[in-house]
Every structure is written in C-alpha cells, then in structure tokens.
Amino acid sequence: MSPVTFRTVDVDGIKIFYREAGSGAAPKLLLLHGFPSASHMFRDLIPHLADEFHLIAPDLPGFGRSDMPSRKVFNYTFDNIANVIDRFTEVVGFVKYAIYVFDYGAPTGFRLAMKHPDRITTIISQNGNAYEEGLSEGWNPIRAYWQDPSDANRQGLRQFLAPETTVWQYTHGVPNPALVSPDGYSLDNFYLARPGADDAQLDLFGDYKSNIALYPAFQEYFRKHQPPFLAVWGKSDPFFLPAGAEAFKRDIFGAVVKFYDTGHFALETHAREIAEAIRRFVGESI
Image (cartoon, rainbow, N blue to C red; front, top):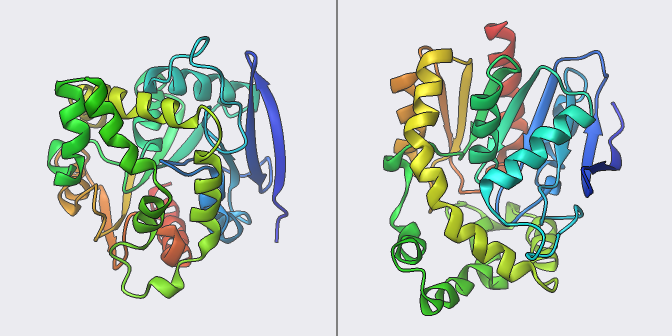
C-alpha cells in the first residue's frame, strides 16, 4: 500500500496543506473537499485508490490546516479560492489531471475545468452540484441572505456553523448513524471554532450565489467539452438532491450516475464502493 504523506506548500504567500499518495507516474487525481470539512474527508478513500492513481487532496484556503488569511487581505469568494487552487496545481506539478469534487469542491473544480479544459481528464462529482434542480429547500435561509444581505440574515446563518449542525450534516440520511466515525465532524468543529473562521464561512455563504450564476457556464462547458463524468451521490443528501445528479446526463453524453443509500458525506459510509466505481469508470473511459 502506498503511504500517505502530509505536506505544506507556499502558493503565492498562502500556505496550503495537502495529503498525497501514489506514484508520480500514475494518472493524477485532485480531490477537492467541501464545507465545513477539509482533506481529512478523503482519509478512507485515498488508500483504496493509491495503487492506481497519484492523489493529492489540498485543504482549501480558510479550511483545515491551510492558511486562513485575514479578511482584510483575502476576500473569501469562490473565484479567489479557485484561483489559489489553480496555482496550487501548478506548484505541485499537476499539469493534466482528473478531479473529484464534493460540495464546495464542485464550484471550485468546475471553475478550473472551464479555465483549463485541456488539463481536466475526468470529473467525478460526489454530491457536487451544477443545476438549479439539485438545490433543496435547505438552501432557503442562505437564499434569503443573497436576496437581502442584512446583518440579521447574516447572523441567522450562524446556525449552519453550530457543532450540532455539523454532526447532523454527517448523520442525516444515514440508515445506521453508528457507522459514521466521529473523527470527521469533530475535526470540522475544531476548525470552525478558530477565531475568524465564522466570518470567513459566512462570507462564502453569501458568495455561493456566484456559483448559481455560473451554472449556465458550467453546463456549456459540459456540452462543449464532454468530459468523462461520473456522479457518485448520497441519495439522502439534505442539500443536493438526486435530481441534480441526474441533470448531468442532459449535457454530458455517457455520464454515469450512481446513488448510494447514505447522506451528504457519502465517503463516511461508502468509501470502498465509491472507490470501486471510480476504478471501473476510469478503466472504461480511457
């Protein structure tokens, strides 16, 4: 089994922490996490794939062990996060690579794909949305903030940062919550409790509307470039509905969609099954 190494690299003044495994000569796979997590969400998936892929999983800026720059010097927007990760791929030597995107990792990864369609070999989306019909009513409080960015609406979103909400995100829709390790949500809550993390996350809630605005552009990229595409979806996700996974088939010929009986953080319960789906899909698509 390939060992997992833990590294930090300077990306234009921002230190980005990342996990790495696999041979440098193997096909490259960039793993992009979501809210409120970090690269540790891939801790079970990486060992299943490290014999076949060169995997790198960074913590996005403001998340995990990567730098969380002051809001005075860094605007917490998805454009800026994508720009940092774009430079990160260049610093670590990822010239041509597949992407695995989840939650916030999806609008980050799709921005990279639109900017560099020649670099992206395959897209794997695990509850990473790009369609209006994929958004559940769970987004309503955040939509209210988009429509009226008042302080009252901003403060109302702090419920999403509460420790019990993080646990709920991990366990909702999981038939047997006892299968969900406390490791992931405990680390997430630790990082969320850092000074300044709350306002950075509230800024990203507000900027998520920029991702919705880009949905037509993401979809045009899918139609034009037809990347090999695999959706692996927790079917009981309270935020991103199964309809959002099925919608990829409209724009990408041959897109494969697989549903698993679990919730938002599907890797917590189905890492082995998802790894097997990735192996089969990539083997058939190259």
